[in-house]
Length: 67
Image (cartoon, rainbow, N blue to C red; front, side, top):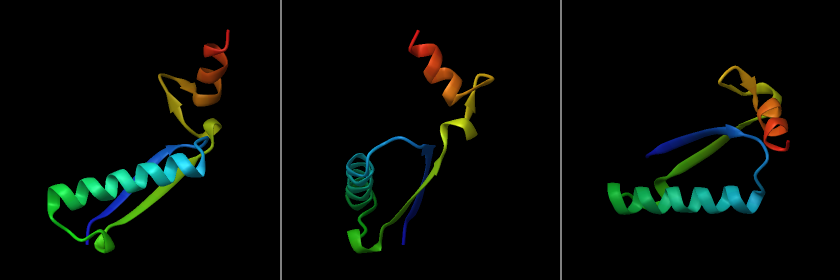
């Protein structure tokens, strides 16, 4: 049973996340030859203030893009 964990910053819609999980499921079905019922996908979301890249939180990065 393939199990995939996706870690990402919060902010995507439920529809976006469901679409991503469907696409991942189909990729595993196609490339690993497993049944879709065997695929487990979990999303771990972190608030933008709890993720950092390049020494800036994602809140800071988002604010800088808005300038």
